[in-house]
Amino acid sequence: MDKKFDTLLRQWKMLQMLRRRPVLSTREIQQKLRDDGFEVTLRTIQRDLQKLSAVFPIACDEKKPIGWKWAKGGESFSIPGMDTTTALTLRMVDEYLGKLLPKSCMASLSPHMLRAKAILSEQASNTLGHWPEKIRVIPRSMPLIAPQVEPEVLETLYDALLASRRCKARYRRRGEEQASEYLVNPLGLVVNDQIFYLVCTLREYDHVVLLALHRFESAQMVDTPSRKPAGFDLDEYLASGALGFANTPSKTISLQLRISRELAEHLQECPLSTNQTLSGQADADDQFLLKARVLDTRQLRWWLLGFADQVEVLAPKSLRQEFAEKSARMAERYE
Image 1: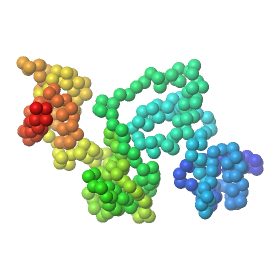
Image 2 (image 1 turned 90 degrees about the vertical axis):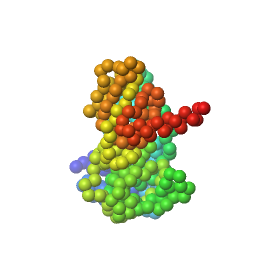
Image 3 (image 1 turned 180 degrees about the vertical axis):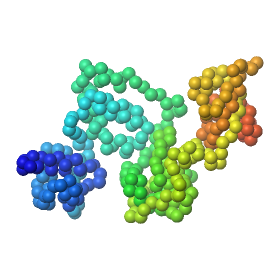
Image 4 (image 1 turned 135 degrees about the vertical axis):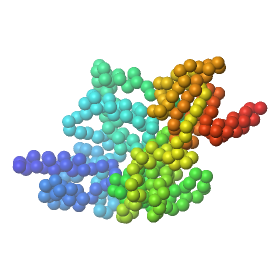
């Protein structure tokens, strides 16, 4: 292979290796190059990195051994260059996914987002360049400000999930002022209403729990394999009502509601469940009867309360009694 071409390929591989986190030492870069078929000395790698840092936004830290990384805020690049369609996709991710995720999640994409915006502004005459101005996504629920997650915690938990490793973590439970230390077995990560939850077990227990990431004060991955309960499946766990904060795990109820015409029309288009039935005719008060099998969760209760006087719980009897008591307490507040 031509020497100049070999050097070009080697330097391109080196640029591809570098990330914002974690840093790579020259020895780690040398090993990765060997894995790709490049035999090169540490001195050559050091010279390459010095030359590349004069052209590309890469930097080294002051530690020993010296670590190299892509500089914070440095614009990304790729071969081939970013086209308009890719730029539009990233722009829409920034606009909508960025509002659902903590800022720390989007930080690694920020250089790509900046490049995408620049490309779309340069292509003002291109119809795709105006697409973000024509699309809006409006949340149905009251939008809340997402709690901030420590970037180091998020990065550590991502790494632990990928490597199937345990973590030592300091976690503050809701209502408690002081954090406690836990040995955590990460199983999955889910997002619900802008809040990140770690699905995990603690120590040697098989009981699966949800820990909100914004309540982690610190997390450190340890060199011990994560312990996974036999037969655990993330989708099955979520389907059991875990994120709905089930009153009784996996319990379903036969729900019967008397609902307004407006709500009936909405649920005709967006059913509560696949087995939902809705009376074809309204009663004398222009109310409709709805029946459905649903999970018994707190989320169900929040949903029902959101419709106020548009819904009356008929069954199960225990849920009707619960809502009668809630309604009485609510009425007392307004007297």
